[in-house]
Image 1 (spheres, rainbow over the protein chains, first blue to last red):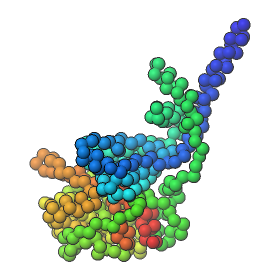
Image 2 (spheres, rainbow over the protein chains, first blue to last red; image 1 turned 45 degrees about the vertical axis):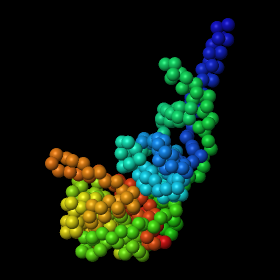
Image 3 (tube, one colour; image 1 turned 180 degrees about the horizontal axis):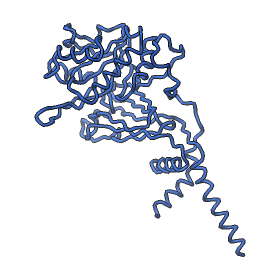
Length: 141
Length: 217
């Protein structure tokens, strides 16, 4: 009987640890390296009508080799200050990052007057991969 | 403890959603794979390289302006049609961003070799009270004699900043003042279109990379 319990406990441990091991050891891939933010059509009119719309967060987190390209798109009918730049209607802006660092852009669209983009290193260690996957999962929930 | 356990369980149960198959990426190659520093743009590989700067799609025409140039003549953006223009905004009393950027641009021109003749650096002040044409000329000349500065009335410069999406906020520092201003550099192609925006902090190699693309067009 004790042996059966031991086997059961071992099986449970393996069942629990195997996915964790996968999370730590499997390389992280992404279908796209782009982090996309879009200004929907009608945003300007909504703002003029008094609605408070926060489209672009003042802190953006990117990860080298996984999601390291910032893409901004203006689908509105008027020019918009969007992140670091002025964008015309229908225009997009694609900014790649190659170095892990904290990038601060002046951005009048935010109350703080700036937008911070934190580019993190590629998760190369098991713990970094587990942390990255856990954070991604929590963000999606 | 409970929330941590919950997160772990969620992680274990939903892991497959984070394990999408690898796809070819559009990201640029590592810096080490880019054209070597110091080579003229014309000597670089014929294979199109990716921009290091942020790219606009579609590009728009650089807005027109007429300012007072540091060379004593009117400064208009369209006078440089046929050249690639690097357009920066700042002020000569800037101690942080502008000297670094202008030095990088000076190094960039040297690295370009003979191709530098097709590249024009334009620097527009956000501080018209202190930056007259003479001061701009002296300041820019300390980096590269070919740099051209622009100044004008506060209203004229404010209009240019608005057209180009440039922020510049005057801040008091004791009895003096400084500016918090946009620190990026616009890359304007030979046709006068704003093609890209290079954020602050990129080195001359990245400018050479992008200029080599624009100069080949």
